[in-house]
Amino acid sequence: MTETSPTLPAGSLSGKTALVTGSSRGIGADTTRYLAEAGANVVINYRNKAPRAEKLATELRGLGVEVLVVGADLTDADSVQAMFDEVGRVFGSLDILVLNASGGMESGMAEDYALQLNRDAQVRVLETALPLLGDGSRVVFVTSHQAHFIRTTPTMPEYEPVALSKRAGEDALRERVPALRERGIGFVVVSGDMIEGTITATLLERANPGAIAARRDDAGKLYNVSEFAAEVAAAALDPVPADNTRLVGDTSSFAGE
Picture 1 (tube, helix red, strand yellow):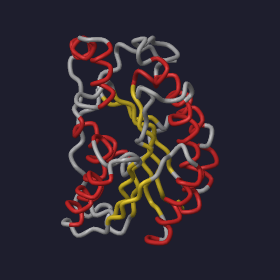
Picture 2 (cartoon, one colour):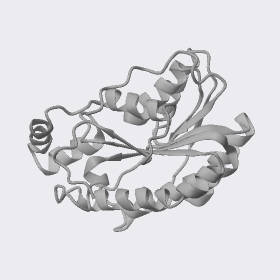
Picture 3 (tube, one colour):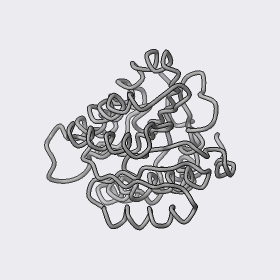
């Protein structure tokens, strides 16, 4: 079982630039905060929470780092290209890309929205970012045990479409690992259990009352947002695991492939 990482050493990311998708709130916001506290200049990406993103930016600028706020719909190729054009214009390059944004449980979306966001958009973001990512840079993909182990361990029905789409995204990204390695780019999947206080956990609890408490009892502990974000941030700096996978929390309930 992985223990919660301390925040990153002060100055360990000085001179680096990091972009975290979906970083106006939740895990993305806390991950961005940890990276900035370690000295990184950061790009806050949001889809429709501009005031929240700007509030975080103001806080992080107080740390003495540069902060760029860029709205982008990751399912729209032109929007993604415009975001990275802006990153290139302001910073010239990118050292850390954290693929945190995901979804699929929202109401009123197209039937294939989960796949669009959790697979297609993840690949699009990575490929669009490649010209900015140089030797020694790092890509981190954030997922859940429920998605990572979906082929061998069933999850609750309400989450299954999202889990399958996130695993499809993970697989599509892993196919690119050899090409990334050739360019000196490290790639890490960070997988965690249900995270207390996230939108996903709230929606699952609404659809299946008692689900989160049951999972907490089974696992013994569920990480909260800030604890899990510390693991995501650490994955941007720690050595890349041999299997490109950082498992956070108990996995005894999940069967390996």
